[in-house]
Length: 254
Image: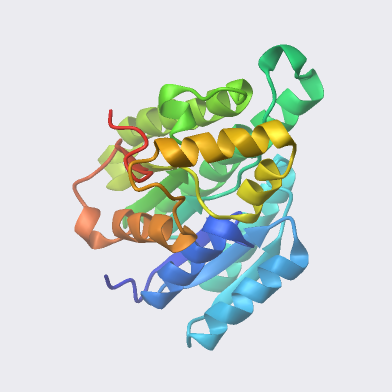
């Protein structure tokens, strides 16, 4: 899939799925900005992009703060002159029964998983509309947001919000030839999954149970998620919008 001449912004691109997405887009020829709260991680991925012979840019940003996001988007436009592709890969999770959770955890989950998506969309969509050349938005949600998941009530709620928001925005911006779609991973081998797996003995058992419930009996690799994002970011997906694609080894079939 050819993306030469395009510019991409990957929010949460410093590791895990985000890193794989940034490298996949850059591998297809897109100039790619890597936005992450971890400065060193963003710089490392940007260096990997440049090693591919593609222009890469590292952006240190707190995606839960609108002013930070607005500044970052302005910096990317100043560097690349355009943003054709926006991918939201940022995410955070903590497994615990809802009745044992607290408001501080809720706010962190909602801020990272949902409000940050609102901020990037609010900053990037007017730019895409004003250019008049269309655009692609791909938001990473989760199968938990489609069917629910034990010990992940607020996480699932935040990811469900991403799905509903994306479908609504897809309707609103279709007239501008902007596609908005969602990719829902199941378990994926990332630092976040490892953190959840080792959070406690019980969370480890939950991850093992979900792995066994996956027809392919394994977690995804980040690159497998990235290929779905690459497709939805490409001209091949020009007539696809408002859709939710699970890349979860058959964990959910809805």
